[in-house]
Amino acid sequence: LATQPLHRLVLGLLVGATWIILLGMWDDIKGLSPKVKLAGQIAGAAILVAFGYRVDFVTNPFSEGVLMLGPLAVPLTILWVIGVTNAINLIDGLDGLAAGTSGIAALTMVAVVVSEYTLNGMLGELSWLVIGLALILTGSIAGFLRYNFHPAQIFMGDSGSMFLGFTLSALAIAGLAKGATVISVFIPIVILGIPICDTLFAIVRRYLNQQPIFQPDKHHLHHCLLEKGLSHKQTVLTIYGINVLLGISAVLLTRLNNDQAIMLLIGLAFLVLVGANRLGVTGAGRVTGPVEERRTTIHR
Image 1 (cartoon, one colour):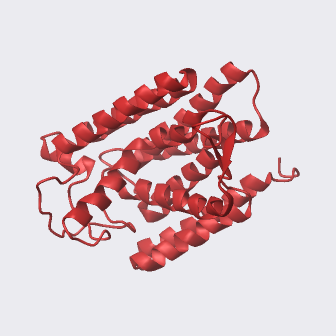
Image 2 (tube, one colour; image 1 turned 135 degrees about the horizontal axis):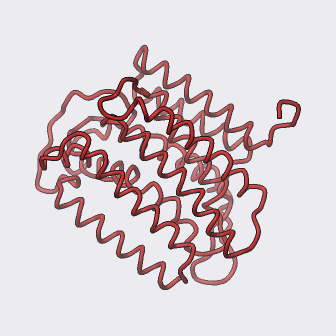
Image 3 (cartoon, rainbow, N blue to C red; image 1 turned 120 degrees about the vertical axis):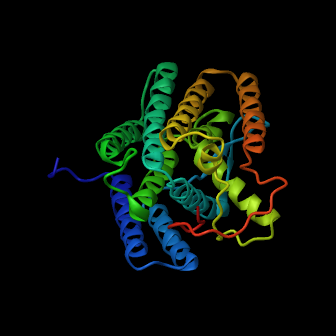
């Protein structure tokens, strides 16, 4: 293997992930302002773009063919990478939560690619690449999670959580977001539904409470479940279960026709909004105050 040339996308992921790990280590050791960390994440995302990671098109939902994104391709790709990187970083508030969520997401990506293979009867080079990298990532997470699950003996810090989010965002671009069906673009969003929704709710919650979006609070999903009386371990396992259900839904999206898939997406969106509101994740009717929490660009 050492004598074989690296695929350009693999090389890009190695370079970009190394940069993100160094950025996270710097933040863990010295502490970085949100603006500096965001600038570093933009640089990491730009590395991926330079090596060919780009969402150039999406399937046209109104007719046959695709919609070319043109000049929007690069900024949308960078926005996706930064968003997922911070989303995984954001949920790293309990032992084993970010690692387990990322492992389930990586395995789901493999399942989605395999499901599409059973439908199409063939796998392209990028599909094999996604399967291989996702399985490597899953194995690494499994070894780490043995010591990171509650009560944790080791912690990943910003360097670990940002690496996981960065890698998952790259794998989604490489193999999942540019499929031949209208629903394909939603599959990675469903797979990463917990961290993405938790991040979006945090931004909206802080905006409605007239707080800076970088100001931490304690109304994330894991905080709300703890407030409901669940133990640390029960909270993490509950979120694992939700991740698994979302993963199954993502695989189903590859098997359903467009009308059925749209109904499933509407149902998932309804359940997420109702559940988040009942748990207090949306912050509706609350005035949240600043709290001291650790790490992250959009703080926990």
